[in-house]
Amino acid sequence: MLELYLNAIVSGLLLGGFYAAVTLGIAIAFGMLDVVNIAHPAFVILGSYVAYICNIKLGLDPVLVGLLALPVFYVLGQAIYQVSYLSFERRGSDSLRGLAFFFGLLFVTEVLLILVFGVDYRYVEAWYIGPTLRIGFIDLPWRMLVPCVLSILLFLLLQLFLSRTYTGRAIAAVSQDPTALRLLSIDPVRIKRIGFGLSIATAALAGAFLIIIQPVEPSVGREYIGRIFAICVLGGMGSLPGTLIGAMLLGVVESLTTTFFGPSWAPAVGFGFLLATLAFKPSGLLGR
Image (cartoon, rainbow, N blue to C red; front, side, top):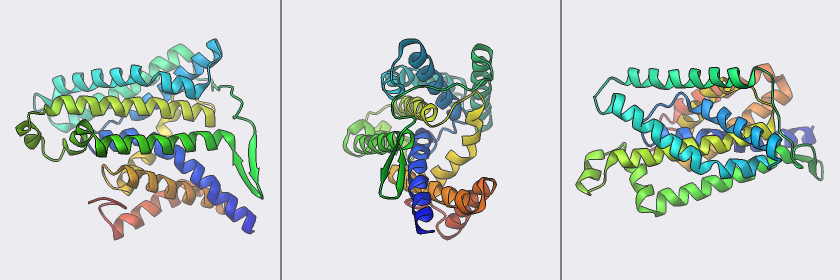
């Protein structure tokens, strides 16, 4: 019983590391920039397919592909925010129109992927996808361990960037007081464009992690829409450490529920945990 319990906790922590990577972009876009990017999972899946193509056609490691694709998706994110800004934000349009824009982007991306790749599940090959590292009676599947470790490293790097650099601090502050930024001769639109570029770039890297963990098809990203926003709120809006802790906690709760009660209970218990936490701490775990 103890062995089963400990393995469930470890599996939950590994799963939480992946959840953290998927949620990171939302923590930046939604938590810091006040941009409700419903299309975020579409860019995760797009990153998965980029990793798939380069792995199958060129034999490149999916993690390496995810890292190499970061600048491309960063530029793509900047372009998308610029379109959104010029079409809605600059004109003072209501937020529902901006939300509809990202909904449309989600479905257009999904349909394009279906037209190009079909609805068959796709997977990649790498040395760490099959084997399992065993420490005592604890099993650590490499396909979960590698994304988890890299996710934590990504969080540390971004936290250092946001807390130690001038641009990073501006990103963290832009939604709170854009007028104060203008008084410091900082263009809030430029800062938001940089932040949104980072959001989309991290989503693509999370997509490379996703296709390592499981086969993907174009609509699989829908499974994560509710979960990633829940983790963002649970951790505290705009708090990267809170997002990481929230993702780990949700991963452990889902893993324990799946192990002892069955997978069908995991989403309900996970969101129940979210509601219970917010009832006692409405601002989230590390929210202000």
